[in-house]
Length: 105
Image 1: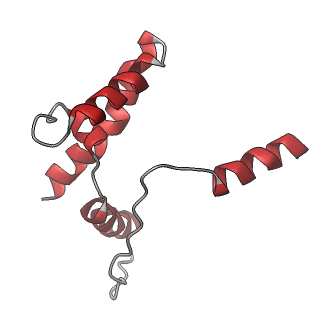
Image 2: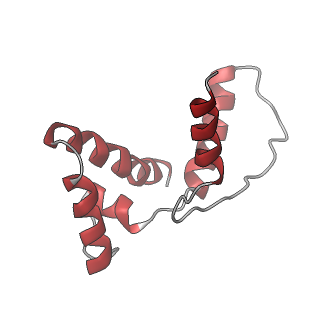
């Protein structure tokens, strides 16, 4: 591994990340034999505990009551910084958590 690769990894670990939320789910007491069932149980807890931020609502198109002018401006700047063809992918990535929480609710 090159030195610059290690440096990039270190910067990614200790560098600024913005708003971050860390949560811990309930321990699984009954582990199913089926890996898909186990994965679904873990996914359900992840999405129930996932903290949505204004950018998620903006991307999902439900921003009116969930964001402010600063959030909207920041989102527009994020999109504008990307090539036009990449903007739908970023929007989809940020909107996905909103859609997941709606499905598990």
